[in-house]
Image 1 (spheres, rainbow, N blue to C red):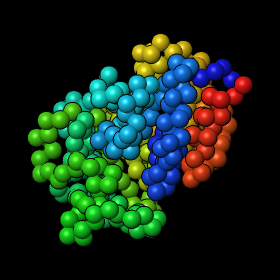
Image 2: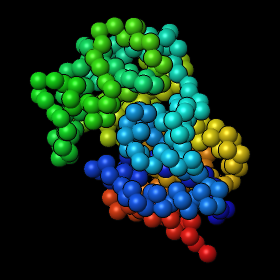
Image 3: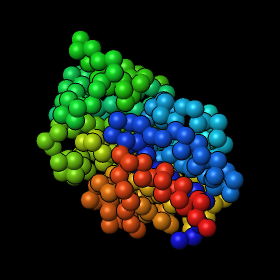
Length: 293
């Protein structure tokens, strides 16, 4: 394997444990090792930027730490957006119009700074997310049964319910959907392909969620853009992931490494698998790679 200079790491199910933790001291150590040899770390995730900032708080001073957020829609480094790709207002309208055929789905319109739930879908999405979290035993910080938004805020900190989505002024970067736990995500995606407007593509983002992204605007494109920006050849890139939205990133990276409990649809694109996100396998593998003789 050619010595990597750009390491791309997914968050949920990869860097983060199931309780959304990771070894902060080890991450600092890894970033310092990378800096010493001119390498970079890209956190590549479907998460919204405010949530990425929350997860990585305390590490943002590292100049070689970059974010590829919202499945490739935002490239960010040290408090500055390097690139941002968003939906046109017409495409937002057409996408939400198409979703009127799928009333069983929860909807979040994710923007650069905020996120919005159409008021008529608030009960649907809060019930879906609450059911999922209850089934997995995850705690919901600040949950108030009288306020449906409190079940969403752990994932979208700046979420609001809105009556008129057309009134949104912030840049829309994706539309996130949540499915009932009994639904097959890939069957739902196949169904969506038949109704979504041209220019919008569904991708699985794990845990029963589907992200509607700009066609061609995925983690793979984000990684390619960042590699070019940093003048790092594709042959010196490596990616770690576990879910369907890591597919294009795996296809771009010179080396693709899956977690042991990855989505079966992702595994054919992986060069090999490592251990579990529960055991910190990613940081262990990166540190071993950086310190190998």
